[in-house]
Amino acid sequence: MYKKPVIVFEGIEGSGKTLHSRFLSNYFKKKKIKFIKFREPGGCSSSEKIRKLILDNKSNFHKITDLFLYFASRNENLEKIIKNNYGKKLILIDRFFDSTIAYQHYGMGIDLKLINSLSSYFIKKINVDLTFLNLVNMTNLRMRLAKRKKLNRYDKFKLSFYRNVQNGYIKLYKKNKRRYRVIDSNLSISINKQKIIREVEKLLR
Ligand code: TMP
Image (cartoon, rainbow, N blue to C red; front, side, top):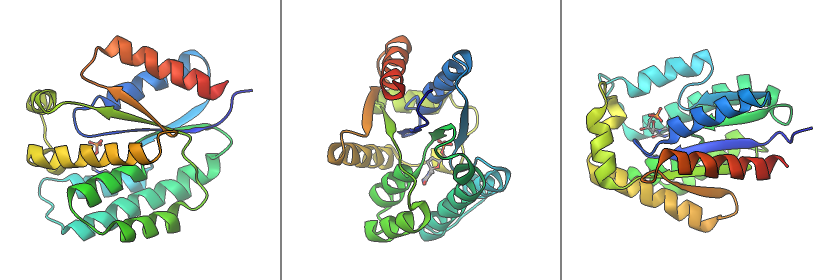
């Protein structure tokens, strides 16, 4: 029997987070390991509606409004996906509460105490077992963003914003190294894929 951990992929735009999480879900399918995968913001259908609202280029919400929308989206996933599957199936998430700390606190300057108290109210007993923190340098970030055909509202900040967000992630990692594995997305995809598999196999053993 496999363990049923919660695995999260985090990182700024262009950090390879979505590519790596997609790769891991294909690996689980090949190995016939049952899992649930979703992204944040988004996930269940009501949460996807909130995602559209937040990321729409025509939206112009205040940063605190965004904060509550991210939590609204997360609450839908907690109630409709996580609660029913936690401990029963492996859960793979493309972004979770670390994104809120990195973007809304380190990126936008919202009070960390407010974010942490909302997180502890909503998330309660859900424990994340492993977080892959995907890092990218600013040159690759600029190139990868330039290649995107469609940019949403959160793809258009200045590079300094993404640098602050990424430095925020690194601070989180330094405070709790046991939960994080750093993936250097400036390296080749095959090296990173091997590292991800190695770490996940260790976790499932
Ligand atoms: P995505 O591009 O990975 O789908 O994420 C959409 C954007 O949402 C990304 O720029 C990060 C942002 N975001 C936050 O600012 N706070 C959050 O809590 C989450 C989950 C995402």
